[in-house]
Image (cartoon, helix red, strand yellow):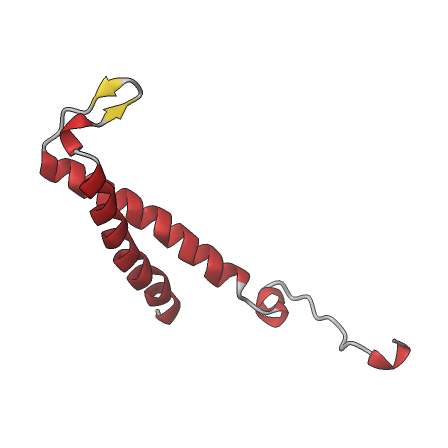
Amino acid sequence: MLRIMWVLWPSFVVAGIAEGIFFTVIDPQELYLFGEAVHLSKIATYSIGFLGFWAVCAASSMMTCFLQRSAAEVNKGVGVHLPPADNANG
């Protein structure tokens, strides 16, 4: 549960900031998707934009948590037990 909060809370905050910056520069009524004008209300556009930014930010945070694991955590569920490193052989 703690790792889920490590992913979702920072990504929520950054998505809010990213949406604020994005929609300060770009008017939601002037967006185009695949060459076609987007015919959604401003609230729908803001909501979809926020969820999109949140998904991208959450994926980034999730990748950080995934890459931060130690070798012992990675190998714990696999059943692979590596021998301790022998530093005497150099």
